Image (tube, rainbow, N blue to C red; front, side, top):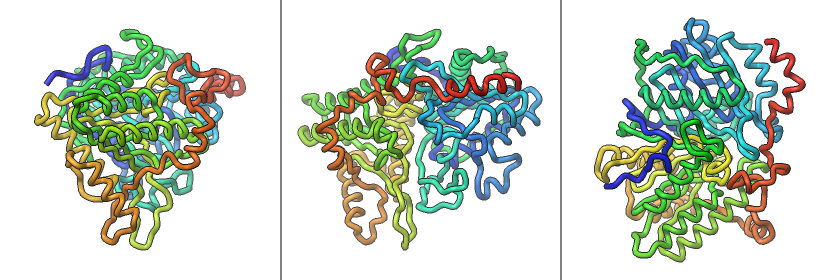
Length: 512
């Protein structure tokens, strides 16, 4: 079976790994980040879209048994106090003022005033106009790393059960919605070095001093065995990026994630499974349409798990109408061509006397095709994630349809579907959409004995159809598909919160 992933076009670098797998939802990721960081002796690098200094990494019994503080910033201080050579660097997107109400206020001052001298925090405003930094990854010394859709911040923590009410699912003293996401874990020095290179490049672009990149590969490090991992049998992976700046050793601009998705969708023979926070990319919708209209090709089972609706008015303006347009498009093509297409959202788990208060928020960014390819990371299927934002994915490819990697991809997909339906794992391919439709139909009808949490996605709603008759979403500035296709004077992502505060706070922060 010929390889699909091409160096240069789809991948920045390929790496052998000693161990790899998925951590499903923030309870497992935060716990394993915490445990891995306790082993750090020289270097801890953390890149994200958003951080909160006081987010609790461990909760419940995990917190009661914790060997160190569980709040993020206090925990980092503890690490430096107990590892005399450890240096911690945190790189956050320099967010626009439109996000200010959602972010920890005066965060740069918090991280300067309240931290050990070997912890350094920077806002990164080096993105292109109309773009943002959206990569979420962690490097622990030279062996362990994480990559995916999860930030270390409020409103992200949840368990795989996604209970309707969970007293541990709190942010800033208030309960928050059920939340689903995925983070990949890697053990191996090759990928860790590449992630260190990527972090170092962005750190310097953000104005940071060069990092101490002494080779620590030969140093003895504490053993670490990850808990709660959904293992993948892969021993090799590729790193894939979106970055309009490119990199010192790569093309400019870099659209590896977009090109990977388009080409893999075209190659699909049986099954496409996608979880994504947003589905507004016209490039991805076009790729799905081309595949569905390909003459003489097998009919596909296509499953999309999305949010029921945009989280905020800002999200609705940014991607809601564009997503409704793309959903209507692919549904129309599937009906015309006979492909099986199911688009769903998921409800939380309720007790017998409960009604769900809101849907589980899907924040993951994962695609599995034919159990041959699995890609996971930070990139949503939006125009901006595939063009102007900086994003990072990891991709695994099976050598054959019946090898161990293919089996582990299929198992991961089955586990995820079991989580979304609230039932057992679902590992079937043939008739998958019909099976999921049957579960969703029975659940919608309130059929006795059908506890399925999966529901048919309502978009495009009547209101969205009416709006689409008078508004062209591609003319809006919020989800550009290139630097040239957005009006920088109207974009919500021009500049950053840091630039708004820098004059006010510059003198103070420079003296700390």
